[in-house]
Image (cartoon, rainbow, N blue to C red; front, side, top):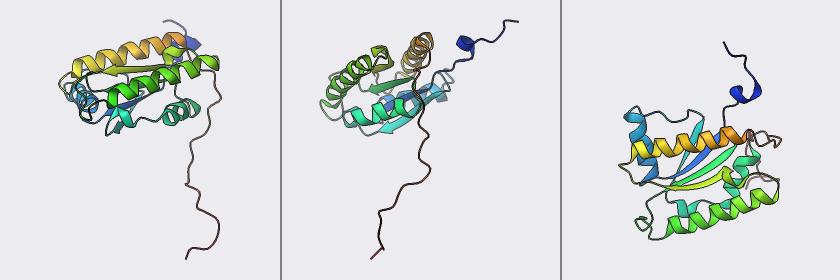
Length: 157
């Protein structure tokens, strides 16, 4: 057997912000069809990729993600008209910010799938995971996730 080294032991942590109308449905279809995609890919369902906030993408890296994928409706087919076009601009901006701090811009990616493209979703997720695996860990110190939501100071009224 091959000895485990750092590269073979690395399993990339990926956050996928998925439009609930198309990409989330495609991920669900992939799962119900038993088409494998990385188990370390964590899906966050959102109403539209146009609601994906750059802060959430950056926080994902801060809390240990090695890659962030934003998956929306096919271009020109967004349920909210142009939400996925705004999302693409935000992803490209975040990729540029990653590059400015010394990380690879390939760690942020926008993909487009329709609800019936479960196999395509799995293919894109696997391809992205391979890219992130080749890049390796971010090297960022992982910030522990908050365990409690701080309450404002003072007495409740």
